[in-house]
Amino acid sequence: MLGNFRQIITRAIQPRILLTTNRLNQTDADKSPVTANVPSGIWKLGKLNHIAVAVPSLDEASSFFKNVLHAKSVSGAVALKEHGVHTVFVDFGNTKIELLFPLGDKSPISRFLEKHKSGGIHHICIEVDNIEEAIKDIQQQNIRTLSETTQIGAHGKPVMFLHPKDCGGILIELEQAK
Image (cartoon, rainbow, N blue to C red; front, side, top):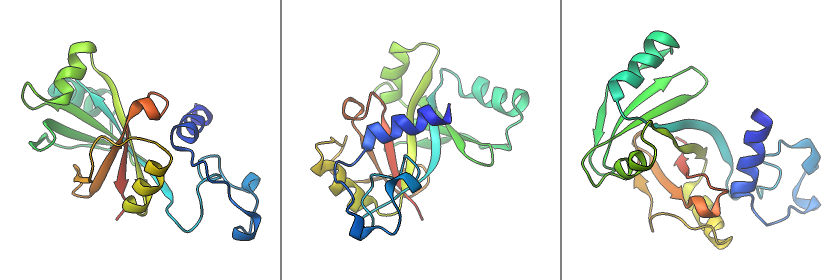
């Protein structure tokens, strides 16, 4: 499953700039599939920060992760008016799941839940070390973003969403690491 995930991410935001051997001390074969085609010195992908899941009930979903799966921790609900969502973070130690519930009828999560009544994966969030450079590079490769500028996300850091039609059908959120 991890191999498939790496292939999806590589296809979704694979830079089309080829690395030259004089910029590398190692070959592309020595690198992981996720970082093999990312130009060095510009920006780098970090870790998977979270997987966001739209849910029809925050209480039921929170209870499931806390009481059935015994997640390391489950936060309380936080309203993010600027994004039109309530969020709950489920921490597993090595990554998180962000539970999303609509905040108002115009919430993008309301529209998602109209199509997917029982909820489902909404987006994945990947950290980058330089979000502004990542956005410039990605846009030069004709990958659309959902806004013109970064917004402050649920963790208080700049984020940018990449259009799923340009990313293999996956809505990707890039988040500034630290």
